[in-house]
Image (cartoon, one colour):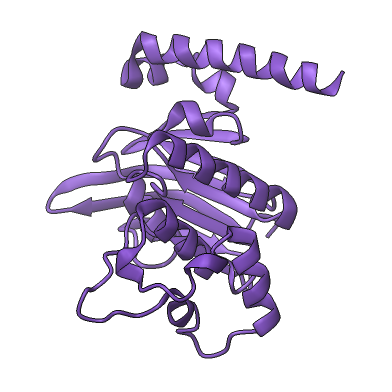
Length: 241
């Protein structure tokens, strides 16, 4: 198969509630896809199905052979009773290539944090550490579940810029669930709007004009996104002059 992951018409029912209904999705090499949707729309469940944590009730998920996935969860609560350091946390694996570890530490800018226990880190620092760990196996696909939801606005912006940089430099695919539409729209190549089913999908500037997007997020958000894209495109044009 040409795609890293192919999802065909998966459905999930839990406690007699339809969580996902006939959802299809393709994640190709070097894709950057953001899944958006209201709370309770099934976004995290979709990620769990993609990674094999949860088996859908119907439909199929196929992955390319030997696909390596790096996963960044919504949150990790560091245990105060087990003061593990950042460096030790990164080495909690069967084998750690020293060169790869050094590269990832530089890439995510966490060298100054290595001797600190996890529980003293700020939200942004912890997310960079989790990102470093997700990158250690040199994944072809990075999956992120609301990676910046506990960060302030400047922290969110810095984190998304780091993700975009890693996507471009490593040429890996990124699949991300996010609420921060105005921040992720600049880097994402494709948006999938999910509300138990795929409401609409495509390039960000197309999706924001879709009636289903407007129905879920309102006219104000659609207008904001349109203005953002207009100014963002001009900024890029000026940059290349």
